[in-house]
Image (tube, rainbow, N blue to C red; front, side):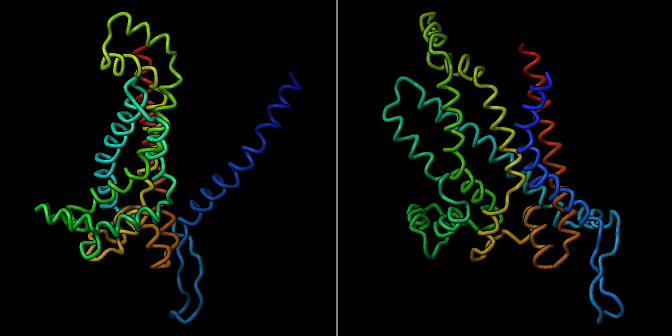
Length: 296
């Protein structure tokens, strides 16, 4: 038993070292930073000093309308993006897993390739495609009588969702496809012999068997959605874009830190966003856990 415990401790040590270095220490530093405010001494001619302010930064962040509206944007983004991503990735995976699919390897690679493009490059590509003076797509839409301003207040959110879908649809499709390939083929053959059709096999047999993958992708997608930053930051540079510098909570924290040099406020906003992500993650796992217990 002692030898087994030593072996387990030896194997777990690298994980805990990395976890402490890249997670625990930065989170602790952010929490500490959020409790202090930089103030100038004297009449403003002296240097700055860190003054303990307690929860003042948290109150300032929650009292700021721009920060609260950022969560409203995230809510709309999640309601639009997450169902489209899960349904699209799952639908593509089921199509590739079906007996009618051809050239599976080619389509897997073609659908996964957008994920290999760095997020900032993908956003720049789409900003080009959204810009009326440059985009062949916008010109083709206008020629067909379909005018749409991708930078308008109504078009900004769908524009960001479209970029995120282009980046992550193929990646999650590969996860679902791998889970589908792991299903015992004898189960599917038995269902076919019993007279089950393609739709019944897909939604009555395959989906319940890959429930764990669905939960994992949904959980990671929720966490990733709350971290929305790169795509709107690039769109913010677009001509006449409705995306402001505080459009999401992450952008609010970035602006507070690097434009206003208010690191305490930025840290408080980041901690509040992290707490929201933790609560939502806990809610998703609890909800899926209860459903699993009911079906067991």
